[in-house]
Amino acid sequence: MLEIVTFTLGPVQTNAYLVADPDLGDAAVIDPAWDGKLILSEARARGWRIAHLWYTHAHFDHIGGAAEIADALNPLPLVALHPDDHVLWRTGGGGALFGFKIDPGPEPTIDFTHGQILRLGSVQFEVRYTPGHTPGHCVLYCAESKVCFCGDLIFAGSVGRTDFPGGNWDTLEKSIREQIYTLPDETRLLSGHGDETTVGEEKQFNPFVRA
View (tube, rainbow, N blue to C red):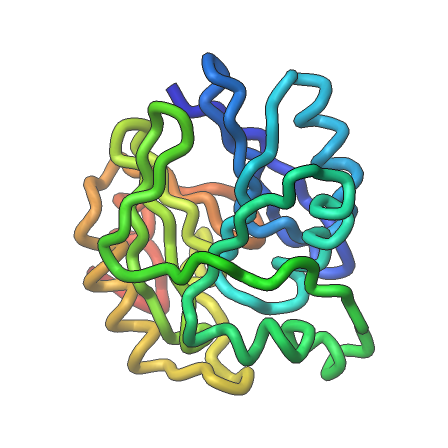
């Protein structure tokens, strides 16, 4: 069964998720936002081994802790990102626009593709390609645990910005309708900022994209 530890880190209060199959101790960090040492410390306290860094997208506030985590691990964790966000990753996640210069950490070695299955011990995640906030944005859905890690695609009562370079409103709306609102209503949505919500709540109450 999947275990999830949530951190809210960095200058724009970004949610990072340490996830693991606790029986085997295999762990991944979804969006290592900032302060990598805090995530490392929690993993070590639980006896978990971080082998993967999975990025929903490459904005600086979602990758800012990657270098600190990777520098402490041997072997290096496998880094996964959709190829359409590689350019954004190489430029430091757009941090310069906000006065931040980050070390983006190790280069991504796994390209996310729509429908790809990721395995973490006995737990499986489905990659869903959801552009709109960035060209390569993806969400990670774990059907067994009824949870979707949705990055900055959708929030509790809100949606991701589309006014950054590479953003597109029509594309974002399409991604939400086709890749989020098609999930079971009870699915938990763990986003990049703010509180968790559910698919059913957002279909009924989200003022930006109604089902």
